[in-house]
Amino acid sequence: MSSSEPSQNSNGHDASGVTGAREQWERDLLNPAIQKFPERRETFSSSSATQDRIYTPEDVDSGAYLEDLNFPGQYPFTRGVQPTMYRGRLWTMRQYAGFGTAKETNERFKLLIDNGQTGLSAAFDLPTQTGYDSDHPMALGEIGQVGVAIDSLADMEEMFADIPLDKISTSMTINAPAAVLVAMYLVAAEKQGHAYSVITGTAQNDVLKEYVARGTYIFPPKESVRLAANLINFCAQETPRFNSISVSGYHIREAGSTAAQEIGFAFANAIAYLEECQKQGGDLNQVAQRVSWIFNTHNHFFEEVAKFRTLRRLWARTVKNRFDITDPRAQMLRTHTQTGGSTLTAQQPLNNIARSAIQALAAVSGGVQSLALSCYDEALALPTEDAQQIALRTQQIIAHESGAADTIDPFAGSYYIESLTDSLEKEASKIMDHIDDLGGASASIETGYMQTEIQEASVSWQHEVESNERTIVGVNAFIDPSEDATPIFRPNHEVADAQLNRLAELRKNRNSEQVQSALDRLRTDANGQENLMPTIIQAVRSYATLGEICGVLRDEWGEYTPVTVV
Image 1 (tube, rainbow, N blue to C red):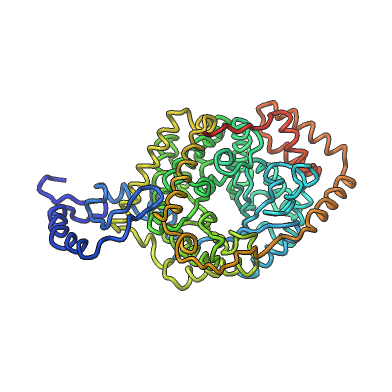
Image 2: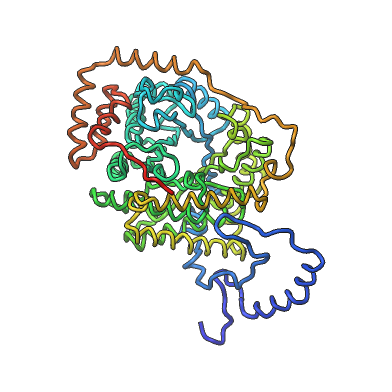
């Protein structure tokens, strides 16, 4: 650009002369208006203390349109991963479901499919998430309480009875024992007569965030990353349509992080998985095509729109520059999002319908590939059928009535959105650089860095609420003193007995010698360098239980002891 040409920002807008015009506007109009009508309060996003009152071309980084934005479906994918986005195909509409027994969950899945849901999302109970069978003492009081209890292949088969696994995509929120649950899912599909190559779906398989955000870890980080990479590399070869990992910023955000931390910490974890996959011999141009994501959506509408744009751009640049990944399909960040469960309130729970709708619209405006809404009653208990239907209908209204799906990246060119996109990218990049300096994601977890940063962000947010700096409708403002916040729904307490009886029957009727042989092979392979997925699949086929398989790995690898964060 010659010196005689006016400067332009990345949107192509002439930015010259704006500074002087802004100073005149502030002097002649803004300052007198503030004197007459003092501004009410500071404004907050999650990642910066305040938001400017107005944004202009000055606030957008200068740069080339093609370099920073480009067209949908083209690097760096800021404007979307598909050329037609929702004009060609809507996002997948999911609702998180799973409670009690496999039979009950099967009935709920069928109800959701009948109501128009296009993909399933399975929740597992805490014993399943931590690798314990329902008859283990650690499972007492938790069987089927926050998700479905899955002890063996028999449960997986019942959960998907009469649901064609070659046509339905299933997302499974499972991490430490993800390899075992995916093995069960694949064998269940096999028993329906389907080849692994046609199976679609997603396993979360992101155990690193468990150490800092959720706590459903089992093994030490090194062994956990090995097992996660085993699953990723296996699926890249055997189940090319299945997303073998869904790296999660969602739970990091639920634990209290800012939006920038959500990006930075999740990306650092993803880098650790790719490095391990590469170490195990995986081709990252192939492997990275099936790295999917799950992120949160909170109430600051514009920051969330910008966040999804930032995610795509920063990830494409990261994998290209760091790993020399050149396949455009491997550079794309494709993400599911769930509206923020932690933003829902037990007080005035019907307000949560509005919160989830705003969050969902932000996610759609940001260009996500899959979406689920946290139901309005989730702050009280597991969601009711009515609440789930409202959540699904909210998505359908956004898709078919709001106009949000009519054009691609509708907020592009907004000075505010472009400024937020740039600032989130810079802040997240700083976080990633610092984690590199600490030795990577595993090292930053072992020293407590991630945990401390999330804890401090959470405490800061809570202080803002308690001091009334941040308004939460129905909680610290617009309170209904007559409200009785009672639980709406509780699972059937007969669930535990039914599951325990089913497990006892399984143990009695299976071939014990085949089970023991498969577990012995797993014990041997756990101490070698082999990919463990074929061995785990064989154990699953013999109807070895989740607890038995994880028990072998516990014996050989040990259990993780968390660091103390002070």
